[in-house]
Amino acid sequence: MNDRRLEGLRRRQANSLGFLLIRCGQLFNERGIAGVNAEAGRPVLREAHTKLLPHLQAPDGVRITELARVLGVTKQAVQPLVAELAEAGVVRVEADPADARARRVSLTAHGVDAMLHGTGVLERIERELQPRLKRGEVEKLKMMLRGLLGVLEAG
Image (tube, rainbow, N blue to C red):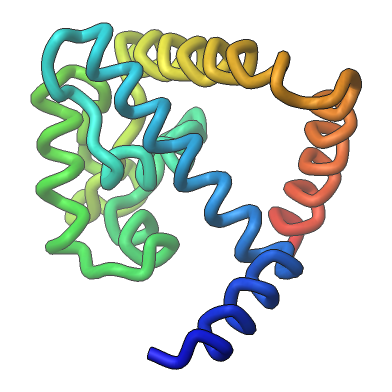
């Protein structure tokens, strides 16, 4: 591989907001999953689960087809993940009141508790990283990310 091209790639990535957000998110996610699994004493959370969980917070749940759409995968790819979460008691799957052929997935009380626990693990990681960052930078970064999240969620 051409070292100059690789160095050029690294420079571009170091200046790319998207790359930096994705890479930081990946590393934070990996630490979070490892923390949850370490506390459980066994693998209970996989990266594929973390892709679904943010989309399950609607009070009425979400259709499996909608989960597949937002994740960019097939319904057949989502169903085993939903089944794993249902078996663990994290979600329930019910017929959609508007269309009995469709299935809706929603968090159970245990699922909300599990997500609260996972968020606690992420907060612990944040506290562990805080001394290695400049004073006040974490709060400033969170404020900026909340703004960016709002813009991205609005479309």
